[in-house]
Each structure stands twice: as C-alpha cells, then as structure tokens.
Length: 203
Image 1 (cartoon, rainbow, N blue to C red):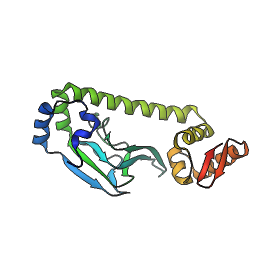
Image 2 (image 1 turned 180 degrees about the vertical axis):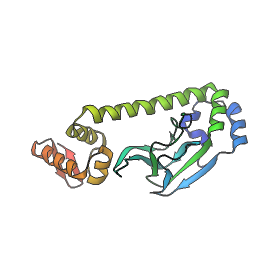
Image 3 (image 1 turned 90 degrees about the vertical axis):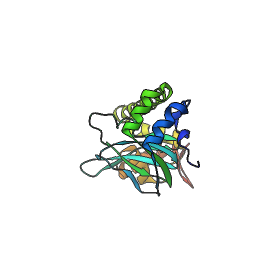
Image 4 (image 1 turned 135 degrees about the vertical axis):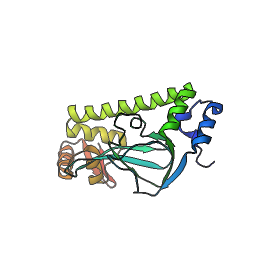
C-alpha cells in the first residue's frame, strides 16, 4: 500500500499476527486533507488515534480572546492525539491543521485499546510516543516561563536557521508581531542577528 499503516511508529517491531485481526475487524479509515484544511478542532471530542503517514500538520491553540499560538509542526510518520483519546475528558485541547497535502489513518479508540492489550510492542511504542510528546510540551512550557523573548528567538533561529515570515514566527513563539519585530531589531543592533536576502539569520 502507498500509505501503509504499518509504517507508523506505533507498529514498530509489532507482531502482525496479533495486530492484523484487530485492524481487519475495525477497518481503520484512510483520510486525505489539502493544505490548510482542519483535521481536528480545539474542544471537539477525540474518539480516534490519528496516524500521519504522508505530509505535515501544525498544531495550534486559540485563546478565548482569539489569540492563536502555533505549538508545533509534525511531519509523517507520526502519531497524533495519543495523549487525548484515553483522557477522562477526551477532547482536543488543540486544533490540528494540514500544513501540506497529507493523509492519515483514523483508528478508533476501541481498536487502539485492543492492540495495546494484545501486543507488548504496540504498548511499548505507545508509551514512548506519549512520553516523548509530554517531554516536548514540558520543554515548551519551560521556554515560555523561564526564557525571555530574545532567548526564545535565538533558540528558534538555531533550530530553523532563518525567520522569513514574521507573523508565522510570532504565532509559533506566542507573541504579537510588533513584539517580535522590536526584539529582532534589538538583536540586529547587538550584532547577534543580521538581515539576509531570505530573512533574519544568526550572525
């Protein structure tokens, strides 16, 4: 299959003899989305695990005042909503949007539970995925609580190389665009950042 469900990190090292009967019975759905389409909406009920097998998505949160914050960008293969489907209040705390044309497998909560019970490898993978996502969120929170905007911006440039779209970068860093512009200008004056043809880069 062009978008094989077994390519997902969830099934790394699994025993198909244990997993296949569950998948055949539940018949997971292969869904396709175009760039900019909503895959899941914040505060909607989470009933399924989403296995991203092609393309990329970005995850964002929206405050009651309408302010948006881009939490992360995820690229296939990856697992979405792993921490939500078994929560007491199983709703999406975020909105998931296709960042490019993408496809993903939609696997029901009951099917995931059955596979976790049947195959230790699937259980181990699932725990790793949830733990890695939790660790990422902890690091993200630490950045916002303990770091200044200039420090967060430097970290962003070290990771991504360039700031091209100011509004998009402001959304990722969770700040207003004017604040980002002022911080960039300050870093340029300090000689730590320079304005290149393709955007702002570290000196």
